[in-house]
Amino acid sequence: MQYVEVLVNTKTDSLDRSFLYSIPPEYLAQIRPNILIEVPFGNKVKKGLVYKIVRFAPTKIKEKIKPIKRIVIDTAVVNLMQIKLAKILSNYYLTNLCQIIFNMIPNLSKKIVKNIQIPITSYHQTATKNNQIYSIYARKLDRIEYYTKLIKKAFVKNRQVILLFPDFSANELFINKIISIFPENTICFRPTSNIKENTNSWIRINSEKKLLIIGTRQHIFNINAHTGLVIIDEPNHFGYKEEQSFHYHSKKTAEFVSKFGVNVVFGDSFPTFSNNYKKIVYQKSDFYKIPIEFMQYANDHKSNLNYELEKIISRAITNDKTIFILATQKEEAAGIICSDCETLFYCRRCEHILRVANQTTQVCPICHHEEEIPKICPNCHSTKIVTFGNSINQIAKKISALFPKEKITLLKTDNDYTKVYSSKQRIFVGTKYALDWKNQKFDICFLPFWHEFASFSLHQDEENIISLFMNISEIIKEKIIILSNNQPDKILSQILTKNIREIYCDNLKSRKVFKYPPYYSLIKFSCKETIRKIAEAKIIQLKTKLDAIIKNLEIIKFSEGKTRNKFHESLVIKTKISESAKIKSVLIKNYQKLNLAKYQIDADPIRLI
Image (cartoon, rainbow, N blue to C red; front, side, top):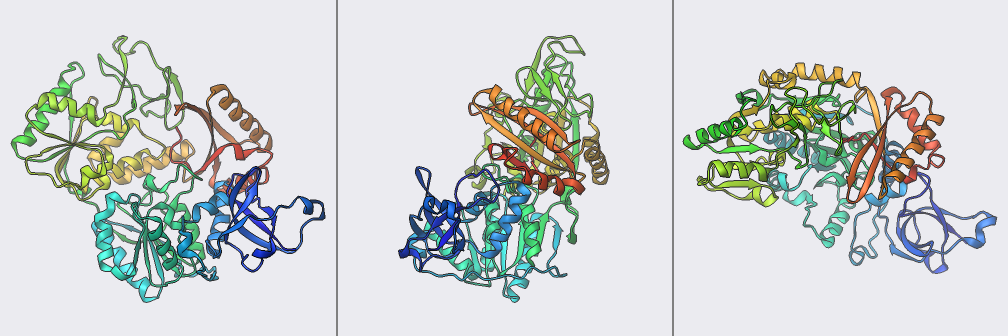
């Protein structure tokens, strides 16, 4: 009798655990590696991937081995390159191999793929001058032109190209432009694509050589032996970080793909701290051409903010200019402020604005220093300590009170950005999502609450702020106006003088002091429970075990509050880049002992709090 090792679509207590099943006689002729089957698993029937075919089974367990239920798809649903990549990702992200494999398997129509045999082609892992990682730094339209040139070169070599965008809707105009250049050789995975379209696309990917594959983050997994080039536009966009399933990042995944003899190109507006790749092109953004005007309203007059808002908007209306008012992305409280003297509360260690953690505590998003929310303002001794944060609806309400006759257009959904607006509509209010869309152009951009943008800093704070202004410059024609209740802080002063190099130097110093990338590697472990004490106990238990296994390990424990009726408790371990691989190998070796399957693990987290 023959047997199969199966990767079952379930979370296991070890990273690469497979389960042994017997092959019924009627399926012997059809069984082959990497096909999709169904197997009994406990009291349920689950899908599994045939990992290996074996001739013998241990005598002790022969009687307990169950037969597979049925074959779901009798052709290989993943190829050898994908299997190799899945193993690399499993070790890097400390995630079950089966979870990664089933993220790679598309939802296929069984009727269409029935009896279609796609050969599992081999690949050669090479390290030549032709398979490297490059960067393009240019405006969006210029980048699209470079992409088309690179695609044409790949087609000459009869190779496939994968082109990824962080958000499909915001980039649809650019995507359609590229498709019009390569209409016969393009597969586009649109959000509206149905299972039939996706199945036919999957068959083409595994059958044709000269092909352009356009998609979002998960389509990095469409690699095979014919892949010659991967292009990722805006690789540092949060849209490439998967937060729901295993926490992979498309950019990091592409770096691993480059080891298979595939060229990788990252296209962005400006270089980032983690992009140490060979440059193809570097162009200065329009950010350097557009004037930035800073205005401060007086702290001693609460009505002064409304006065400044009215003055700026009124001037735009008088001059028949369109004005885009930028609100913070989130509607939650950004921080604490005294409503009388408008004093903001900064971290004593690193001077960043403290962020609200819960009803009694505020925390620094950079160094995790915690303080109690004060009951009395240390500046004016007022007891009116309140949270601040303005949603687009709140801003629109303020403007509507000042300009009751003007129509205010809220940019909230994808449909709002695709509409064509009349020349009479001059006031637009939206969030940072507007910056992903390059089809809307405005004369003036107005940031009325600068301290709110600064308060949402993470460990990539300066990088995010540079990105903010670079992206604003692509949708603004005339100028950017910033309004604040304080004098410009250091980073804002550098932005106003357009001293990007100084921002980079300061940020690198800060990252080194507080142990963040590129000097340190971060791994976040999270636990979610309906009872807070249980979540806390699990995190404390994990910390105790980690301390016992790995000596002198820097561990930061913190609470993330309550979301969807569950309390989130987390800890982050920081390790030097030179030691990160060693630490991960220890974690892999002790995966079961640490019971890591019960935690959500996020290597290279974007958000810490």
